[in-house]
Image (cartoon, each protein chain N blue to C red):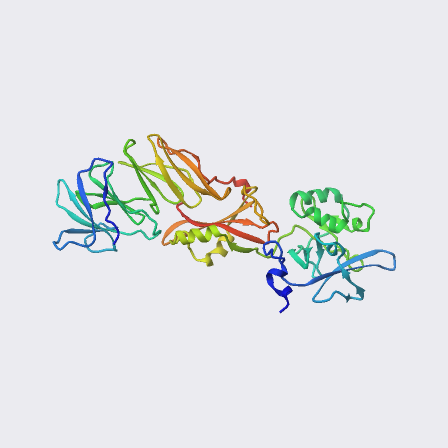
Length: 270
Length: 198
């Protein structure tokens, strides 16, 4: 078996930050139509990047340079954030734009600002759609970008085919992060063999559906690839007839794709 | 065989007691806790009690089920007629002259016990808080001090001190609880501002 197929080698020994859930590779094609209007389309390839839909696709340039991140539209309309790092093309997130009504042109600068304030990927979205540095008001991308409504929701037109608009709006990440137990949690569950530290793992999914509290810069000791924020999931429940709260505290990776469980405990009482 | 428990005698008490390995050959009144019944019950510590003003009796105090690290002990109490038994984290308060009259301590599980005779109460620790119990019942309870474990280190006339794990710094941090009212300094747990709830 080639060494490159080794799972750790494939993710450059960094499984917390580099993930490749589907193994697909990305290509980009640019062309101009009969009116001289430029078009850009992205397509994923299961294998070598080549021709698709009558157009020739090449490696995504930003990704080919390495180390950068780009948000691209998938063929099914999803927005996909991809990043190139060594041999890995990591799909970092995928969102399905909700269908929204377009209201024509608007103040894209204001919209981009609102987007930035509302969502962490605003800058990348703007740059992916409108180019580095923000907004080029005389660019064809600008003409195809529109505010959907006042406030945080922005519709961004992704150039495709004959300029047909696809709307993107508030993004909701679909996939749950990978979750792994920290040494601390494993140690505590060994020290405290009772149910408050050792309730069944099958409870986790329901607890993750409970309340979610984010504390910025909670952790004071930096760890490579891990964020300093904490997330505390809580859900009411009972053990052996005693009512209380199930708690799972996690430390997310920088990419957000992995959460390290730092605290897992059932607290009896109100 | 584990060492037998001995009565902790910080408070004046009108009884003596002995932790037994097995039931004695001579039959005596035998109560099972929880329940305070003579009909039977769960396995636990077997304690023989000798009240000053009534006949001796035997109690079987069921083990707690939450933690094997739960405390075990026999304690005198601010009320001289009451025996406190902690059986693998489950706490019982029993009137020695009326064994059917008992109470379960609402600390779950009891992981440590510190009598504070100068304040006339006893402090219990579970995984997250401290509880002070006096002759008339609960005196105070602290706010949450820890994420999931408390280690008591020292008690003075004014404070009780200990350590808790703090995930923020990946180490233990200290805390100090005011014995007069249960307020504290230090510790590792801070209630999160509700505005941050996502």
